[in-house]
Image 1 (cartoon, one colour):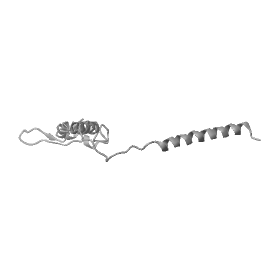
Image 2 (cartoon, helix red, strand yellow; image 1 turned 135 degrees about the vertical axis):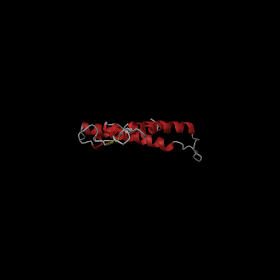
Image 3 (cartoon, helix red, strand yellow; image 1 turned 180 degrees about the horizontal axis):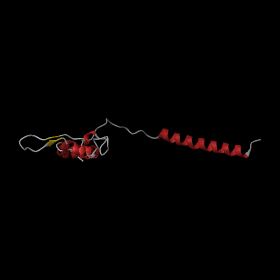
Image 4 (cartoon, one colour; image 1 turned 90 degrees about the vertical axis):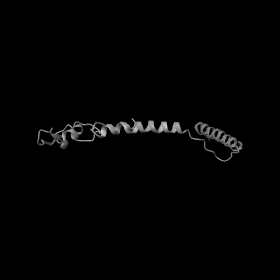
Length: 124
């Protein structure tokens, strides 16, 4: 004797098989379009350059302000110690603080005296 649960399950399995079989039969009879050789479209150089420069801007901008001295503003910062030389004949003192000061304050490449102006050429 067949239980009602088994009969309902059997009916559901038969219904699913009929639906799946009908779907695969329709897929098999669908016409296949004829295609020729593949062709590439022409590239718009202006849009390609615009996309490249805007993408570079998002990628380069964080690098310009990246903190170069990991120990900046700490007691272990070796760049915080500077040396100054007082030349003879009343010339102005020359020290390392001008170059290391922006780094020991936690700055990036854009904050350096000589390199900072060059980073303005980069996008971003």
